[in-house]
Every structure is written in structure tokens, then in C-alpha cells.
Amino acid sequence: METLKLNGVERQYASGQMPATLAALLADLGVDGSAVVAEVDGAIVPAAGFAETPVAAGQSIELIKFMGGG
Amino acid sequence: MPLTDEQIERYQRNIILKEIGAAGQEKLRSSKVLIVGVGGLGSPAALYLAAAGVGTIGLVDGDAVELSNLQRQVIHDTADVGRRKVESAQARMHALNPDVTVRTYDTWAQADSLGSIVREYDFVIDAVDNFATKFLINDVCCADRVPFCHAGILEFEGQLMTVLPGRTACYRCVFAAPPADPHGPIGVLGVLPGVIGALQATEAIKHLLALGDLLTDTLLSYHALTMQFRRLRVTCNPKCPACGCSHRPV
Image (tube, rainbow over all chains, first blue to last red; front, side):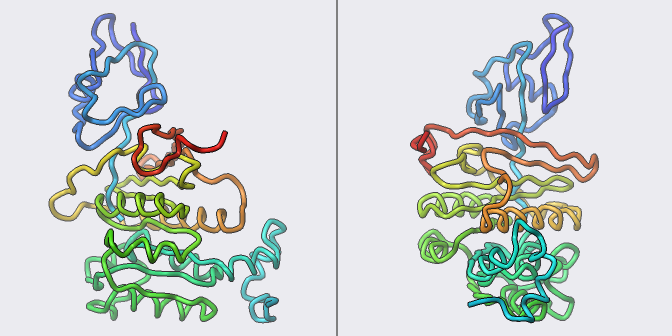
């Protein structure tokens, strides 16, 4: 098993089943990539970088929603 | 000028806090806070800052009160529907605390005018309801080095962070550019902006009185359905075009 920490919660994948990129992870989760930015091990990744950003076991990923309401 | 007997009575519960005392109350009285947006977030922020005795509070909003606002914008009353929001809020704040000077700006926040307003204040509260203006407030406050507290809400969730421009990560360090605004109104649990707006007022008072730890380099998120608060550390983006926090002193 391989593990990611996603928004503070551990998420497990069978070996080889972990999404390869942030874009694939978001698609897997059903999250609209234009509605979030990601923070991977403390570094912010904007939406434009989702497709090129690899996902690897052991990472801590935060998906931060845009919240425009007031 | 020392506090009057009436002020000492009004602010008794502040003053008996050893962290505030009469000196802190006098500091609040001499402080100026600008609230941009007098809606869901701005309502509790304005009421609590007025109640706390912040001496000058500015209100920026170019809108009028609508019936559909009243589910969450608790500074306005049913009788205020159709009235300018800044006037409605000013009247309520004066009724709550006549000590407070409320300056009104019956206008939308604009790039060419917001800077001259912001520069007159010690702290700014971002309580607007659209991404473009949230980024504008961030950029103007960063350019003029005015501390501010950002917040946003969506359905059952809210988030906030405090920015000390040039020293801590700004909104644009985290969210580089605004996404498209949603088409039509978003749903929001009416009490949610009450929680988040009150937290923004808390940050303002803490900053004015140099109390405690501000939500700097930290995005606090709150989910009403799970009752979870999460603190997320965020860092300065060295390439951020707004804040220049990469140049902060070590």
C-alpha cells in the first residue's frame, strides 16, 4: 500500500494505483481544478501546474478552495 | 485624553482584562479600521468592532440592502431594505455605540480610489463577496503596507488569514490570480459569515493591541458541518508580484 496525506487525512492506494499527477488526483477525487490551489509538502502549486506536478507516496497535499463569498 | 466614567463602565469587561486595561482601551479608541463590504462578513465585524470601542471605523460598500441579504447580514434590519448599506450600518453602529466615528464610502472598491482610503486606516478587513475585489484589497494593502485580514466563505465553509504586508505571506502568495466568479448567487449557511466575520474582528483587535498570535502565514479554515477548524501553514511566494515578502528582514 502507498499513502498520501490529503487535507490532513491519510489516503491509501494499492501499489501502482496512486494517481501520477495532481491533475489525475483531482480527477480521481472529482474536484474542479479551477476551484482550488494545491499545496504539496508546503509549496503552493497553482492550477496551471497541476498536470506537470507528480504525486508520490508520502507527500502531504492540501487542496485549498477559492472562497469568494462575503 | 483619559477615558470618561461612562467609557470605563461601557468597556469594563475589556478593561479588567490585564492584557487590555485602560491603556489598551485608549489605544482602541485612537485606532482606525476599514471594513470593505458591509454584508455577511462585514456585519459582525462592524458590530463587534463598534462594541469594542474602536474609535474610527470606515465602511466601503456601494450596494443597497435587499431582503435576501437579511438571512446573514445582521447589521441591517427589515426596515432598511432599499437603504444604502453604509447608511444602514452606520445607524446601527451609532445606536450600539455613539462613541464610535463611522465614516461611510458609498462606493464600490475601485483600483483608482481604494489606496487613498486604505492609507487612512491602521487595519483593513476584507469582507467583500467577489474574487476581483479580494485581490484588489490584497494588492492595495500590500502596496501601501497596511495590515489586513482576508476572509472568504462558500456554502458551509469559511477561511481567513491575516497579512502583514512585506513580512508575511499575502493572499496572492497562496492564490496567484482570481478564478472566474460563479454565475448567480452561491448558497451560504446564514450563520457562517457570523463566525468568520467575528474572527476577523478578533484579528483586528489583536493587531491593534499587539495581543497573541495573528493568523499570519496561516490560512484558518472552518467547516460548519464537521465543526472542524484547520490551520494550514502557507509561505511567502518569492515570485509574488504583490507583497514583496521575499524581501522581509530575517
